[in-house]
Amino acid sequence: MSNSIEIVCPAGTLPGLKTAVDAGADTVYVGFRNETNARNFPGLNLDKKELTEGIEYAHAKGTKIYVAINTFAKAGKTEIWKESIQDASELNVDAAIIADIGMLDYCKKNFPKLRKHLSVQASASSFNAINFYSENFDVKRVVLPRVLTINEIEDICKKTSVETEIFAFGGLCVMAEGKCSLSSYITGESPNTKGVCSPASHVRYENYDDKLISKLDQFTINKFENGESAGYPTLCKGRFKANNTIGYLFDEPSSLNIIAMIPRLIKSGVKALKIEGRQRGQAYVSKVVSEFRKAIDQASYDHKNNFSSISEGQQPTTGAFDRLWL
Amino acid sequence: MVIKNKITLGPMLFNWPEKKKLDFYNMIADEANVDIVYIGEVICQKRFACWGKIYDNIVERLTQAGKEVIISSLALINTEEELRIIKEYISNSELTIEANDVSIINIIGDRKYCIGPYINVYNEEALNFYIGKGISHITFSPELPQDSIKTLASLKTTEYEISVFGRIPLAISARCAHARIYNQKKSNCKYVCEKDLNGLKVSTLDSQPFLTINGLQTMSYTYCNMLGEIDYLQKLGIHRFRIYPHDYDMLKIINIYQNVIEKKLSAQEGWLKLSDHMPDVKFSNGFFHDTSGYKMMQSAIPQITE
Image (cartoon, rainbow over all chains, first blue to last red; front, side, top):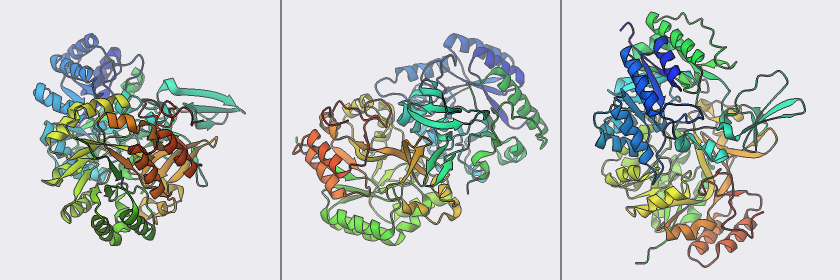
């Protein structure tokens, strides 16, 4: 292998999976087509038959497949999560990405050979938390929260023998993942419970006074002037009012891009970089993966890639990684 | 067997000025009919400094008044410094600890502890895992719907606590939107969150009340009000009811809940009294009814709500 850091790339469909494999991903992660994963969007994700084919395709080319089973199983209805874990084990996936302590425990007791990764939704934000998951459930890798700074990531890598994976590109959660019920407060559905945030079924766009208004349920999330590009109304990325301030109070509608930090991250001992976006198109995946492949293989600072076309006209950011808010 | 209902006072989530906090807890010690008081800083490491001088006094006063005191941990632990401070709080007393982040479970050791509402326990398997670890009780996440609460409570393997009054914690971040709105940086925030005793209101661009900012935390704009559900919860075997401190007449609010819990007032009567006391407030119980958390489902109190 020519590189020292693994690229973990999203796929929402079987063709998407193949595209990612062909583009040079070391690993592709997918979800089953049900509420067990945190991108439970209509028309997205794979059934068992598609995953079987996908695994065959990936493994033939030396690419690994992870399956995200990373929502929180509903009390009294945990069968669907358990079946998904069993399917993942039977299909010989390379790892299951799990957030729920109940499902980690189930997996450990019933499928000890299935490699377990800790989903970002488990909110393991300190080495103590990581050690807790490792000791209790034999978790081999942890996907670190996006709230951590580069210094904190380096510190965690030093203090734990558990592999670390960090978000490298795509959507940015400003709230601690797995501890956020903003979406269910407004829409009744959240990442933890239904695998969705600010779901499209609750989104409306209205034209009023020459302005485009985006709404979630009955609430105005943003207003756009004529010609201003209108982003999706993810509720923490809207414009609101408080005190005398009007604007993006929680988070700018920016996306995450840490490509410039790759050399430092390789040195830090981070094991894998995760590209967000199982809901994205194949062109996005293909482009982002090839750029990251290039950057890692050259461990180069030469990141003059134009990502603006794929981050929806939003400003790329290094997010919490450099603590812009401190 | 008659199970005693317990009213618990949740941790102070807002950053009230020192004197106001002290007066409040003195009043709770002397006059409030609550069995258990959670104290400690749940939201922000920086606010530990604001508890410093008065913390021991408060614990002592509450304990002398016969209240059981439980220390609530931070809801989000990222840094070594945060862990260090919490370790110090744990080792300086023998009180029960409410774990709100799994980071601290390994450092609690043999101490008695319970699971707070910020640790995700959504199903039987997760609950059984923690019961195996020897927890004393669990406070449900506010997001849990009725079906899940019913399933978990039917296990009858531990004591269950549920929040019945107050703004609902919804999210927590490493960033401080509160400081930013007051044009301060988190590193030198001047504790501006102290100005907003019930949190800072966030409205939409169309001036609809939307959310509340409380330091690193985002809360509901509405106040959870489960007066209409208490009877049902008791039938499920839930007997611990959590009320969160806010800048209202908390003795009056505790009294209303106590009377409904003890069946001295009907839920409807309790509602009327609470609405009279807080006419400016919007109530909600949507999470429990498996719908948008901000909504107030009217089933329990059809003749009173709008």
